[in-house]
Image 1 (cartoon, rainbow, N blue to C red):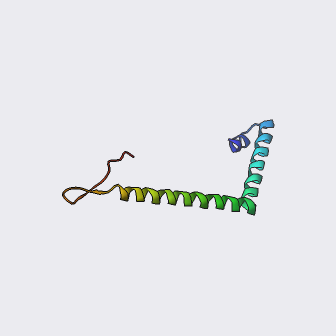
Image 2 (image 1 turned 135 degrees about the vertical axis):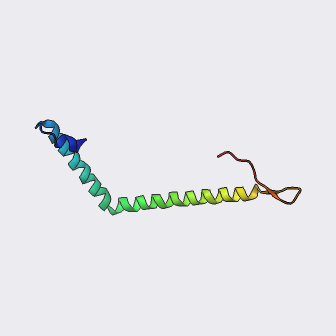
Image 3 (image 1 turned 90 degrees about the vertical axis):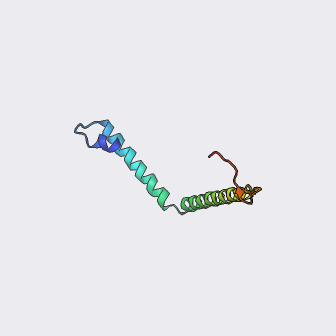
Length: 83
């Protein structure tokens, strides 16, 4: 919306505010993408969440393996689950 406000034909204070907003956004984006501390913290967060997700998936697989029971005819029976 800010870019649309800038490219209109009228000249008013809204264009100046839009330019200021865009400038601030690009400055913050550049700071976030080049700040080593922020990047390291983000990478650590992503790795922690990936480990948590993998652990959860492995636990679900283990639970599914435990729920397989042999029936009288020797076939295995799976538990009915709603996903």
